[in-house]
Image 1 (cartoon, rainbow, N blue to C red):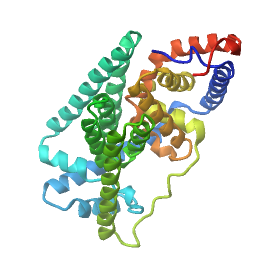
Image 2 (image 1 turned 90 degrees about the vertical axis):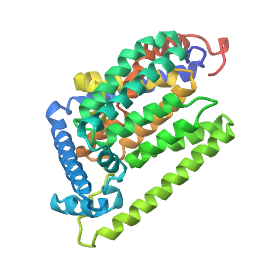
Image 3 (image 1 turned 120 degrees about the horizontal axis):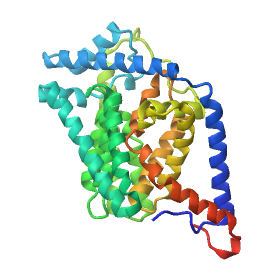
Image 4 (image 1 turned 60 degrees about the vertical axis):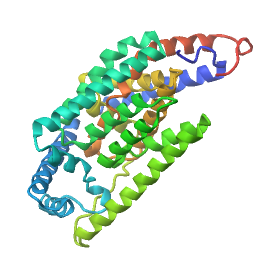
Length: 353
């Protein structure tokens, strides 16, 4: 079911006003965001993949992951401070254990297919109008895999696993979802915000057993990062390079670049992306379904974070929201229609959402 049809006059007009303002800011910013500006992010991504490939090669030959990582970081003038500059070891160990690059890539493709099929069925269950989510979801999943260029790219694995975690979660069965989300975090630490969203939603719905499960997952993730930080500390020295930091306050223009670089929106010009991103967020927010509510909060939280965190060469972070964001467009037309109707009716004729 698509919401906003029964919202109050002031709320409907406020949402439409914010949407118009966002469109205006995006269109204004898109004039200065051209395709060449995406080149540093692409170069950075390829350099990162070369780093990950070489680390995997060294680990496959028997070298310790953290010693190999420290050596390759120094060789390529990559920072070792803070500890999050070094990726978690889970994906490298998975790659080495499989032994074959083809098997490694096939596993990522299988996850993408399962997540896409699952999201399609869940979308159809939420509303028959969302059946076209199959095409959108497939395009999104394929775009993430293509954008990654290599299965060694941690962000692609994390984003598809989070999508699969959403698909697997139900009122009765949430432990598989929690375990899949934990795997995503072990691969890419930037998947961590997903867990607080799931925890808060479970608390909001007064689902205490589920909230406890997500609290345990959050605790395990924190312990893992403590262990990871300790391991990085043992292989670095005070003279190693330090990251310039990721707080760049790029604002909405950076959000648009992130969305263009990491989602199927890469197929469209930036002026159109400036319209599609707010509409996709609106669409997710309008779907009255537990999966959609969790997706909306996660996406809005990540987008809000991207307005503050992220350097120009971090635009590939958009892969973390790549599979989910475009699917919201399916519900955007109905949401706009409901808002337009609600914005014209007198307040007394209906109650708030």
